[in-house]
Image 1 (cartoon, rainbow, N blue to C red):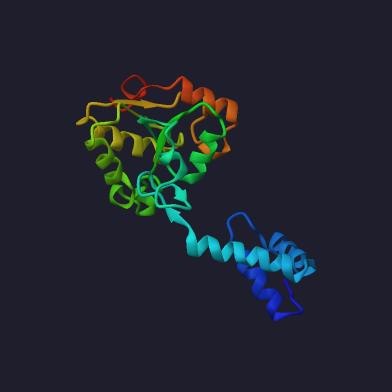
Image 2 (cartoon, rainbow, N blue to C red):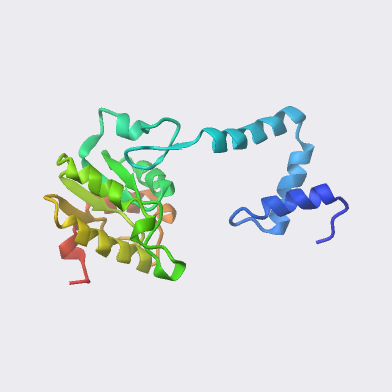
Length: 206
């Protein structure tokens, strides 16, 4: 792609670094910004700057938050005895959109993937175990994507959770193997949460 301006080229290259954004889309976005007023562009850049400067991760569940403890963990309406374990913030948002779950969450920050060099120590697993050691949790729902990495992580977590007096369940597999939670429609995901099953009954790893 030939550019008439080095500044334009640089901006397109930076936008092109975003996931799912090709060169043509990046160029379209940059040209759109050029047509906006200085005030509109300033709002856009300020939002990005503030995101990087002020965003925090909840000290309880590791979800993205504006405060040290996120709104979900602070809410007196949430059932603190049930923890739903998910891969990342996108999965929290997907489950929240179903309006079918009233417990709290624990964000692992990824999945175990030896091929990518990601092991258990790279995830927020110890933080989950610390929450269980307080003795207030009665159920842990393992709501991870139906992929090889998701199943590997579930199996590892289940072995860790067996030492605690908690029920361990997984979401019902109305979700096709290889499916990621963020792309599942809200009705299917909501039903999968409501019809969750004990992990031992749902496991093929016995």
